[in-house]
Image (cartoon, rainbow, N blue to C red; front, top):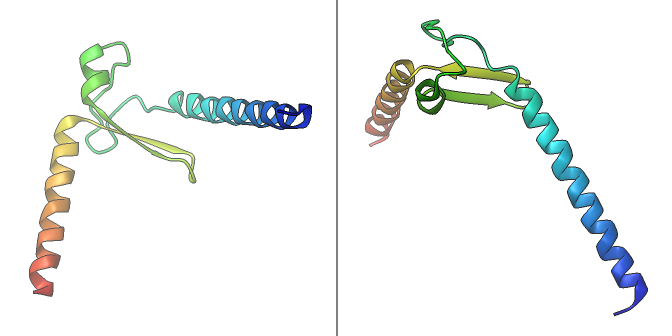
Length: 94
């Protein structure tokens, strides 16, 4: 293996590491934008409550730089409504 090939691999590894660090920094910045309450019902969200952290739903729109937070009740309702709309569309197509 030549010195040139090693040099190229090192440069590629550096670039890959730099890109990963940049992406992590962006995700960390978005984490700081998590709202204090559910977007739909405004139920308060406690970031220190492990149960809430693991059960609530977070959606991220990177292009708009927005973070939305939903409680399990609102998320369940939204998914049911979405399924109903999709089923109605499928029934209408047949």
